[in-house]
Length: 245
Image (cartoon, rainbow, N blue to C red; front, side, top):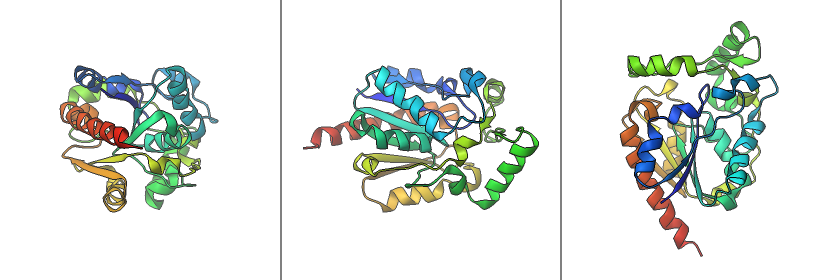
């Protein structure tokens, strides 16, 4: 079975995969769910200098220290940026990349560029008024999130250093040789910012596109459906890996 390295989104942490982890392991997969610097249980490490490059190094460190090979990287939301950087720099350790309602950058892009001018202006104002000028406060959870899940997630969500959103990501193109999948969540997608990445996956070679009738956090709201889909994607990635010359 596959080795999944799940990288959480903005304001989140490894804790966010609590429901998904046992479902993937029950299907025979190995699962790693690290927390990025300055978030989750590592929130005490937050500082203005925490940026995208540091988060990429966080995950490169997991690959190296756990000696992972043929790993499936999954990035949710912001961490589409992170897994793109990791896969591009360590493609020899990666079997495929899955973007779960996530940002898919091209060379030299930042997440700030990809969210659009209106969302960026709102983010900068929140950063100024609430985040001491260098942190970005969490957005609202999707409206279909249960009351129990809101009560569980809310105190664990942390403001995120803005440099992680603003730093551009250099890509060499090595990632383009890997199988890539995009999972587009069609219900309550925030501003529908991820539609353009779904359309890219539909149009470009080397991509698989799936849609879930779920809101932006299916690992919380629909973990069974997500686990089933990821199990299927893992089989396809393994088939492609074995077929490589």
